[in-house]
Image 1 (tube, rainbow, N blue to C red):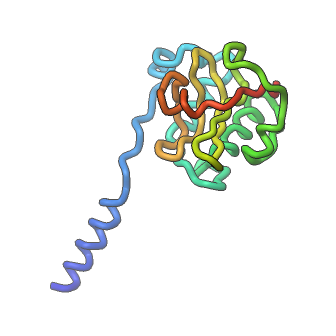
Image 2: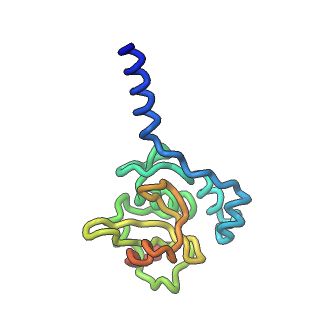
Image 3: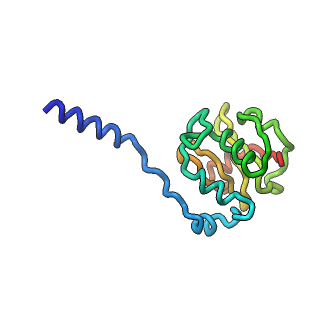
Length: 158
């Protein structure tokens, strides 16, 4: 009896703590929902390859990635552009540009709290791809009130 109870408790704990993953978008859905992600420049394939990868502070792989490792890999893979590893140093790279002049491939930075900074890759149409702490690698809109309030700056490194 005790064995069964322990087994059931272990299973409930294991599966009760897991969160459902975000549904993976197909290429067609990505094209429809995010037309600025063109197949010709590699952004669509790159995003599809990384979408849903979980956020992991300090992570640098598809097992788990943080925001600055994601931007470092994205610009390295898509543009052969080297970036420093951390948000702290990435924000010192390139030149600051206004949000209204942002172009695909620019880095977009946010101040999400007093000491916390976040970075993503601008993809056009007021959207950016990034490693979200809650949803993993996703595309978000700058029109979302959270990101609108936290917006800090855009840096052009290309």
